[in-house]
Image (cartoon, rainbow, N blue to C red; front, top):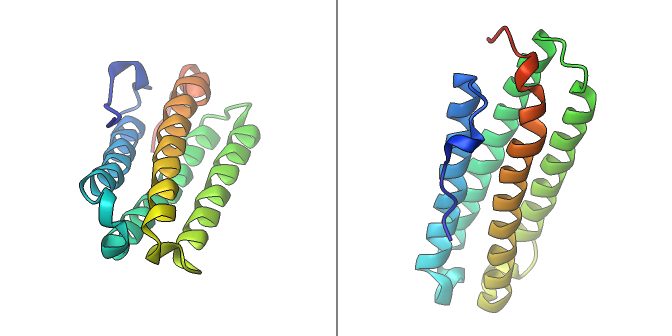
Length: 145
């Protein structure tokens, strides 16, 4: 089930909303590759690894910008928010390492389960993080980059 952008995710900070939309697209891209190749994921492992790497890189960039905006506006929960970003980044790095080392990329059954779990995790984390945590900083943001 592809995750669709909805107005309920809007922070009304154009740069942040634009980045959140791209995160949705990147997760949907991983899901599309997964859905279209479920039966032979190992044949498409490079494509999947590249898609996860792109998501990882863009997420790290987004977090830095978002944290800079919060810092600029002296958001009082900045450190707690950064810790959530750090935990997410650590989890993605851990999952990517699992994906790129060992035999996972050659085992269709395990790869199928890995991507099913990954997509569910990404979708839930992103939507919950935006709706709960990012909405908390929304009233504090007066200045943007």
